[in-house]
Image (tube, rainbow, N blue to C red; front, side, top):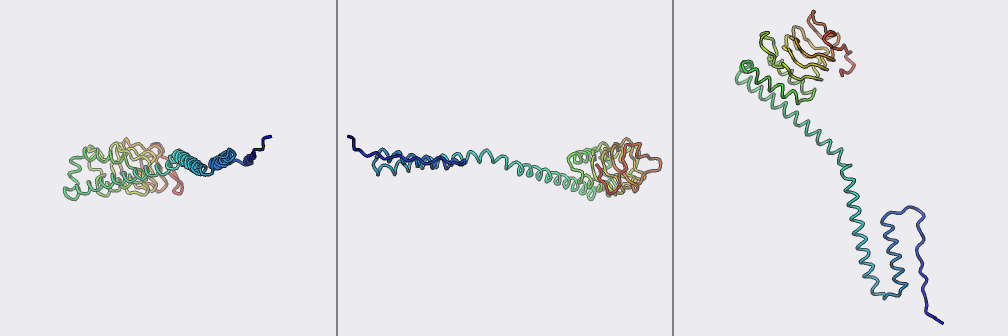
Length: 240
């Protein structure tokens, strides 16, 4: 009769709840140790084997963690990346405005405004290029500068405006003094002109569709804002 002792292998009870990847690895180690002991492997050989197995498991866990983070990382970085793009665009627009105002100021102070009028085609092209890239808020500063520097004043009906063909859409020109300003052929659609003084302004061929005005906007008596496509909007409402 075989009297050899046989150890009963006791496997750990199955988990009743969902476990993580790491818990499965821990269970695998315990099962592996039990099987080794049941086959009566020498005690000295168990430690190296278990140590090597643990090292492999840790390596796999780290690898899986890095892969998981790699998939998640672009999702978390999207808002930050989008914010950086917007900050870069805003910085670029501010740089364009600053360079334009600096260049125009230097010409006016050193060579007087007559040089701009004599070379109106060059400065008109430069002004249009800048306005095309600027946001509505910064477009206001360009118009303010040109008006204050008397570069928008009507001198002759034959002389084209420096804003001829310029894109001022959605610009906030609310409350501005544009008396006798030459706005001929300017794109003023969706522009806020509430409270602005446009008395004597040249609006020939100007696009005024959906631009806003109110009871405080001053026009020539013969000018009909509704016929030009303008909308009457109260001061407390948004001009959209």
